[in-house]
Length: 366
Ligand SMILES: *Cc1c(COP(=O)(O)O)cnc(C)c1O
Image 1 (cartoon, rainbow, N blue to C red):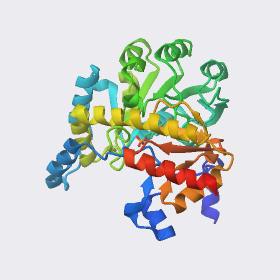
Image 2: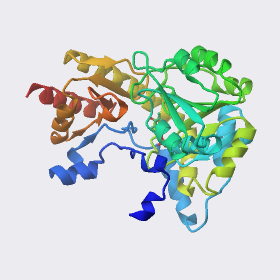
Image 3: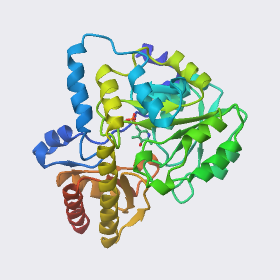
Image 4: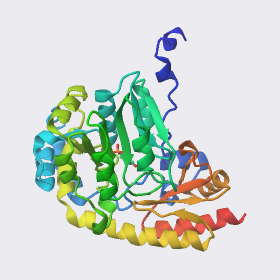
């Protein structure tokens, strides 16, 4: 159609994001009961949402006819208290995906570039391409970000670097010292976005002080989400911490009501539910160990993970993925991440983990 040809070629060249297969879709395709399907494909919290978040949503229902608070005062207040940063340093988004897009909108144009790693989160190339900017993809080192090579890859045109820490879909992690060394060596006119979607899953000894990094480096931006450990993926809410003048820029390009009222209320309540977060992280750690052992016992090579999923290698990844679907287990194929011989599985409940391992044994056997 003529109209579509009027869209810039960089828009037409975008390959759409491939989400994990929804339970309802597999149920329709295979004639399976939804209850029998185990979805371990999108790194969601297998224990659901915090009960406090659910209660907060109920409390908000009476106000559905009203627009949400476009300044997200209460959620920012809760975040401000938790992290000890002023509200002016916080921007909330429709998922942290929104923040990644907002940063790209604020800094990228055709002719400029963003640097990110091979095997890094798929939204970085998407956000870059949507602005007509060049994506500079730096080869990974042992599946992890090669920060030295990323530093060397920054060009005069580069305005943005995306780092996922831990990374999805590889689960790899860069220490706080490595990150700090990286940021300290980046030009001040290049924004460094550290996407910490899985930060809450890190054991205490690996957590670094991102607020201290923010104070030292005005070009540092950290993004977090309520989609993973907080169990609110369906509501779409995340946030970024950054220098107030960068926050001011992002606030100019975001939609005035980019986070809905249910999400705002649930996120503020979830943030206070330490018990739920602690339990989710603890169960994740034991589940991760269980899956790692189980995968090794099947003779499969795994990438050591710091998140709520684990990625393993099998030369028959596509067949194994399809066989698992027939057995009612959804995992994530990674061909789109330049990893055609790997599959990623989210850590589930203990029962889901056993079901996955059993199904995988069957899928590998025949
Ligand atoms: C899941 C994930 C996100 C979170 O996306 P939301 O939009 O907040 O749901 C961000 N970054 C990475 C690396 C992720 O894996």
